[in-house]
Structure formats: C-alpha cells, structure tokens
Amino acid sequence: MDHGRVLEAFRLEAGELSRAVAGLPETEWDRPTRCEPWTVRQLLSHVRVVISWLPQMLNGSAPDKAEVTAAEYYRPDDRFSPQTNAARIGLAQNHAAGLASGTALAEDFAATWQQVDQMCRDEAEDRVVRTRHGDAMLLSEFLLTRVVEVAVHGLDLADSLGRDPWLTPEARTAVLELLIGPDQLDAPRELGWDGPTFLRKVTGRALLDPTETAQVEQCGIRWITLG
Image (cartoon, rainbow, N blue to C red; front, top):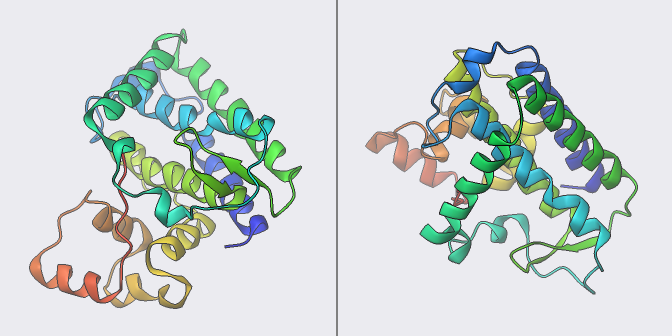
C-alpha cells in the first residue's frame, strides 16, 4: 500500500477513535477489556504509546534501505516474549496513571496522533525508519502496523464500551491488504462476515469453527502476532 493511502487510513481511523472517546464519562474509562489486564483507559494508553514511537524514529537517522515489511514486522520473536509483553503492559498502565482523567487521556491521544500524522505527511514516500526493535522499514510499512493497532484495538474498545464498531473503510482495506493481499478483499463478504467480524476472527478475538478455519486458510491469511 502506498504512502498516501496508508496516511489517509491512519488519519481517518485515529480520528474516529478520538471522536469515540471524546466526552466519555469517567466511569466508562475503567471498564475491563478483552486485552487483560488493561481497562479502557489503559488500552487507549497502549494505542497512544505505540503511536508515540514515531517522532523519535523520524528524528533519528534513516537506515540506507528497508529490510522488513509490515507482515514481517509481526514475526513471533522476542518482541512478543513474556518479558516484552510485561513491559508493554506496564508502559500503558504507567501512562494512564500519569494523567488526571479520561478527558486528559483523550486529549493527549488526539494531540499525539495529530502530531504523528503531520510529521509523516512531511516525509518522502521512500523514507526509511528504524523501529525500536531494530527493524529497518519504509515509513509507510511501519505506519501500516500502526493502522493495525488503531483499528484492531478500536474494535476492542468498541466492544468494551458496548458501541457499534467505527472501523473506517480505509483502515479496513489497509488491514485486509496486509492480511490477505489486495486480490482477495472480497473474502470477508464471501464468508458472510463484515469487516469487524473478519478482523475479530483472524486475530483470535472471535472463535473459528472447523469449517470457518478451513475457509480462512484458503484465503491465504498472513497470521500476525499482536501483543
């Protein structure tokens, strides 16, 4: 997916998430989520944290060439080890604890993604960045992984809050292209699933029965590891 389309998907999906949590009553922020042990407050903090890596990456020196794609970024190595997952959980919890209210968190999230959006728009299409895990990636490829985070965890937050999913068509297409390639974007419809249902199924958020498992495997899913 090209630089401009990924940026648009990120901007639109992050914007929808911002609108969804703006004005959320304080009691709603402490609802549990499926991403245990995080509450709504802590899960949004996680999404904010994983977006906030970008300014430092963009301000750093650029590697000579990209070596890792978005799909390869999700390889199940030590970045998803118990120790790394524990650190990931702690970062989100600490960030949430450092803000006085859900309103402050919502405002902080909005300011963070808007800063990242602007910084990415100022970069060339062939800009290469180095992730905190050491991967040299095209900015567009790394930003695609942030679209995945915002979109999939947006579903988690919608489910926790009892809301209809706000998944945007642009983010849906971006994530589906990563998971099944651009030639099979009709696969969810052929399986009788809407976009949110498909993402829940292929990320383990909803169970697959044996028939569904066989059908999904025929789609050539790129199974990704999510922390």
